[in-house]
Length: 141
Image 1 (cartoon, rainbow, N blue to C red):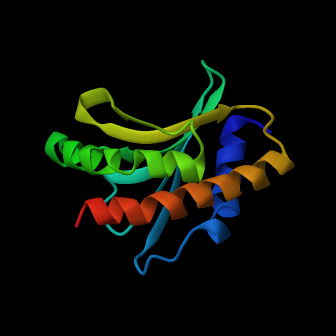
Image 2: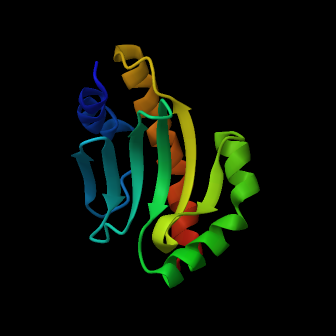
């Protein structure tokens, strides 16, 4: 399937793997990316992003709020980075990014984009969010 088809299908495939956080869950496919967030604040969201140039799928927590809030979140997440790498694998990275943004992310090969990959990646997105979200909430109390 084409990348945009994969992301649209992922929108529904991932839903059963996401935790109920007691607030509204939003899934928004947009071209080459899928944003997922809880509650009203879209500035901090999970993202599945197709990077066709580097032939990768990125899965991450994107902090696109104010530089101050992003820095605070990055600082807090940095204390948990080792634990996150143990839980999710050594490919998880935390970095400052464009416009004062921050992301905690991992990359995966883009292809194949088939039914098996859709199922496997939906499970991975669910695991990533179930692992990261409680830590994110802890460091932003």
